[in-house]
Image (tube, rainbow, N blue to C red):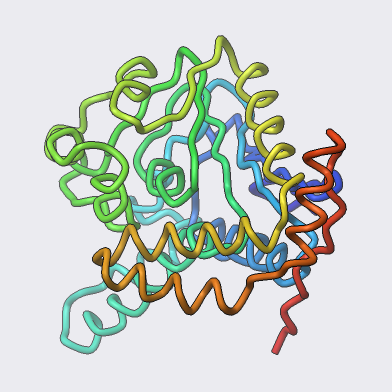
Length: 282
């Protein structure tokens, strides 16, 4: 699958979505967001994907929202209409439009499979919103991360302020949000923003795909359940998270799946696990 913004390929249970507008620094226009959302939710509905890698092309991962969108170009006309806040009715519409944009990145966070973001060069503005909605991030030695929105007189509004402080220490998240300073790969690793720093773009992609294949070899039921438990624990107190665990484990506990996993581990082979059930499209 491909469109104007990215290509999407699958190799067994691993999917790879690659941004493909390097001549535009992989900037995002309003049409990008629902395209990404629909691609990710399509993978989830089909239930064949067990891990997704999001990578990019060119020198930079992404420069975030295209600035011409804010400048009133024809490409940004849809967003220009959304940004009308001149009346109570317009502001109410603005809120719903923003919720729908946020939902496009939330699709990554809510997917039943883990999502790995492979970053080279700049991960700027809206691109950091995307990256923080993923389960894990790995990057090249030349990568940097910045909350760019503060430089253009606005607060970041697509999820990074809500997710970043649950990935890195509060002080680091606040400094990034208030100053827009660039956090280089070394600092990103030190603060936990990324899981690994690799030499170059090719090494990052190889590492991310290898990690995805490692995840895809596990029970998709156990992986999906683990992601659900981790997400709820991140957003709720321990008592609520433990209560969810009793319900979740009772719902997905499968001794047949466990028997296959144990046998594969003993035999030093990959387990044979059925995919999750597809989600009917309404």
